[in-house]
Image (cartoon, rainbow, N blue to C red; front, side):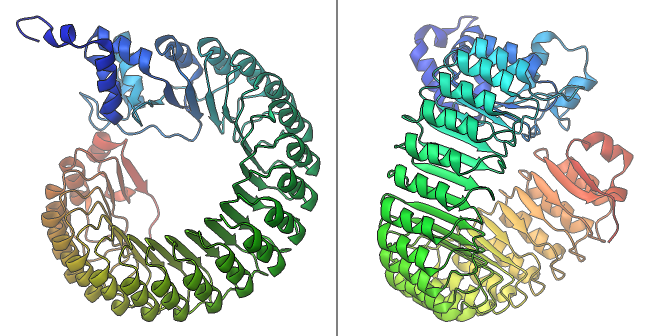
Length: 620
């Protein structure tokens, strides 16, 4: 603006302004504060909005749909927490507290303070709080139905006040609905019948934890929306049986994604889906009463299957997975969890039959051993991510074969694998130079030697977690600091041999570090924190709990340098006093969360930062 004249607005057409708004990102909501024209354009161009359903959101929905007239995607989440935001006059207060403590603000300012931030380029997150917590109800759905006739995607996550009545009103008004997620809502068959009658373009339906849903409702959806339905999720719906799945198999020929979690579903229902839905490419099953016969049909009929996850199956044996390996040649991601009868032969069949495999997770499959993992290493050269949890029979030789045969590996997770040590981890380091993420927890044979190899060979490492590996010490962290300069996250919680020397090496060699967890590291003290303050100015989260050598001095030097710090945990640090807590609060304006013992918070500190304090009341 020059001499009171708005030059920019005269030159820029509406299309250019809207393009600018589309590139702003998370701060897009601020564009509405530029001028009346920008507010109008921002409102007209926004198509996605997310509501926090705490407080009394029904009263706000009418204002929202009145302002944003072209909404296509709406998400209301009962679990969505209000993000901490800075206020012009009260930088430590959450939006709710600002409204409560400033009751005389103008209507325009109150409306602006309710808008928290835009989560994505096209999205807007609203934390809607008031003194009454009634949740999002059928009244709000009716307002959405009247104000958003072109709605295409609706997500109602754990909105317990929603019933079939509100859903009926909405689907009748919004006939173009394509995605409907009513996870955890008390909607019954009556509401789903209306969906089947009105939503002829429905492509995705999520009914997880909808306890009121039964066979009748799903049959109505399958018969009414079967020609377009591509994704279906059913979990903890005790009244859903094979009858519903047989209807889905008969009426939904283009179904691509299926998630089933139920004890009442048996082999016949899954078989009907496999036979009637040949385009199925994602299958996740947690049905303890389904047997090998269902997997035999999947392997024979679902030749386009790319993602498969099997949880808690006690009736599957080798023959089922052998059939999958023999038929599903496009399989790219496999998860096998708590399936006792799955063995090395099963994994070998998957490896030999599915050369496109990129992601493999083995969790609690106690009969899978080294030979099974060796088969993966020999056959699956495109493997990118490997997760091995609670598999005591897998030894170093398995990882040696993976390191030799899977050069594209980027992520490795090892949890409670007693047979894996430095030899296996070192082989991964040498053979997989693209490794970016390594998580090791309670693998007591892994020590400095294996992690030194990681620091030497894996230059692109960004995420390193070595929790409760008591053979890992400063030598490992020194090698990581010297070699992994792209590191952004490191967790050495419970590694009692780690001290200030290792932490200083990380600080000197990893300037991009954002997240650090050194909890329960008894040898970490103030010198390590001083080095972190000098070398890691971008640090956002630090966990120091149970570090007995840390004092107010080290904490002060850390927070004075790390001005972007958002979260600090310092529970059970006897050297940290109320003075140190107050220093952290006053030094870091970006803080969103501080976890500390209650008795270390003075009344003044509590008044100043009550919105971000999480006070621990128990003594160790």
